[in-house]
Length: 502
Image 1 (cartoon, rainbow, N blue to C red):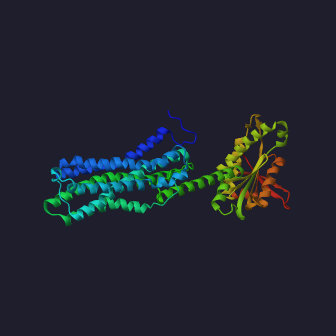
Image 2 (image 1 turned 45 degrees about the horizontal axis):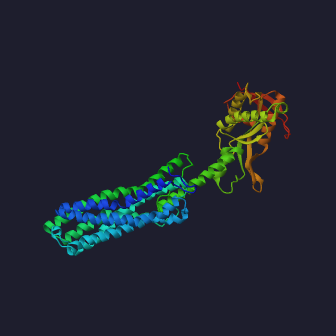
Image 3 (image 1 turned 120 degrees about the vertical axis):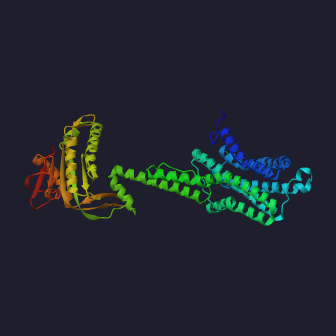
């Protein structure tokens, strides 16, 4: 196996294969010409003329075309071998169908001219069977046949270019960025050759011939046109529709959440430009997703999503809303921390907080801050949470059930959780200075929830909630009143309640 140079993109065998594919497609015009010639001589009954006519086609569209097109791929071969940059060959890539088609069209014109002049230049019995042509028919043939071969080769090489660009993209990640082609023009030329050119040939026949000669010309033109259309439509469809299908599949993948998609740009027109813009868009979405996930490690993921969705400078403006606040804390955590190695303590704490986090998120809450061994969560701020008081109570009950009798971390540490819940008006928004911002909640409701969490120690309870929270739950739960108690920061006593977690 041939060794690949360090800077090479493809092996020598791969480069030869790509060149061979290109040249075979370029000289395929000679094969199409053999079919056309066979149809013509079959209708004319001039089989003796066939070898000479086919030989001319093979010589010009096969041999001369092969030599003319070989040099077109030289710069691309050098790029694949690592001797040129992508920028050096990008224009040649985008012009490859046009340059190849132009060469074939010139050779096709020379071939048509030679065949028309053959009876004059080399009069013999072989050529007497050929039907004579009118000037209008001869001019039409000199225009329509080279136009057909140009269009056919243009789309055949465009199809090849799609595979070549996909190969380069898979090896280097580089895409075309020159878009001077026009999709509308390509489609217009394709329709012109497929539909209008055959019609024009038939119309010229109608005005040029009559009788049996007219029937022969129309039959020949129709037969050749049908075969030409069948061959051309296949490659035109592949060339024009494949990039769109690839883009459509990629869009479906992105819609399904796959942000790793990138599509090779395989055309130099608006579809290619659209594909490039699609790749740029997906890159932006991928970066946005990465930022959202990064935010989600430091603040609740739903808060990060809300910030990104609102755009602007990434700031949530202050607003006041009725919400329920939940505080948790671990009883006797300071004593536990003094007896455990730091790595064991952090491992146990992380496992515990993950256990506490799940019920909060399951019931529509948002964890705003982790505070040492506890956390501060909110329901209905900043994200809507219907029946937020009941949701917070359900989350608190599920937390107590999840941690009860469980030990965490390698040290198998039991954590006893205290929870305080309060409902009322809450102010929420982004606060900070300079480029450092944090989403936070402020107000008496927040302070009260923190105070209630600490009062659990005095009342021997695991969950304490305020009168406003109890009222917000209606008759959904059975609460146990604990009377009124003084709360630091409040002048009047506050009625407090607890609930059975069994």
